[in-house]
Length: 535
Image (cartoon, rainbow, N blue to C red; front, side):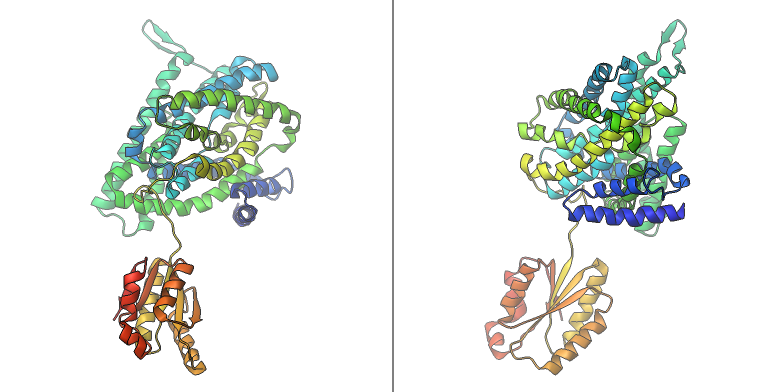
């Protein structure tokens, strides 16, 4: 198990980075390396690791749905009215029904088996859609109309609905269905389906609300934790408990409960939500690699060949007709432009997580056509997951409008670079000491700038020795230039896109500079970034 995880994390990380450098989504590299490590190529991963894939996948999906919940904006969702709700049912439902009918024609399935395939194919992948939508929010694309929030909420609701229908159809096809009888009233499983969907959604939201209340009470009001790491630990345990409990007692949707918990945490304690958001971003870095490498390792390449063309045709018809009609009806009467509606094609059709989780169940249950279902489920992953991961960032700038980023709902990550202009006098050590203190707290890079036309090599060596002494454990570079000090500071700050300037309060190196006014005053008046002055 440990050796398998080493292979997954090490090879998965570098495969993702290679894909990124080739201008491809990192998940493409992770899936490819998973195929290579799996039993169908090199057989490096042990059976123990592959058998544990479902547990790893459960953890990864929990992390990504928690990220989604912590990124939702209640105000934007309320502005959209019923768009998010309609996106949760109409596109996925339309695609599932169209796939069911087309599979009867192309694959000779009966309607129930075709609908079973439709439920697998129609589910949307949180592992692709959630990171994509959260990145768009951090960049401001579509935020004014809450497009990302509507897609995030809709994809979660659609997966709840399709997983419920899938489980009932599976029970029906394996002859284990039971109805419900109360007195003279008897309802079949299919008649109970709408009630089950509503109950699971409502109870999922309630469980998320209750868990969020408990977390805020434990972590903020009663102060059971001492730092953000402990906050994240307790939150992860509570979220996993929701998912596992829902599998044992399937009265509510565990995944929806996790997403709702993140959403309500924003309402109850925004500072706690902000800290958790950072922690779950870090967890996703690891979970993403495990999820997509194991996804590649479990794809049945040997059964794809016979159904490749039929599968591509089936997926195309289901997406363009079934899902397309659902998109139109979902956004009908809204304030979305035709370009924003068109964005749903790359933004709302990626498939990966659910297909990997349930695609092989019909075959394992002995359902006729199970091998074909597994092959088409795998094909949907290989085609739509990379296209979705590539299409979301590619088409967003072309189809969506850019608005102001709300940092209270999303992590806005920016590389921190400090610029420190240094003198040659006694204040050098104080300035470097403050620079080192701030750089360590904010994990920043440092640019040391020294401006002087006539420099003594001995003085330069002494400066470099002092810099090394104070910044030994910090990533820094030294730039030595000539010219007017104020102008050089401003030029370097703009060229390197620094985030802060740290400088002495009265730094000047010549009588001319003194008569023109202090350098710090000149930088204060003209710089566009925050400045920290050191006495």
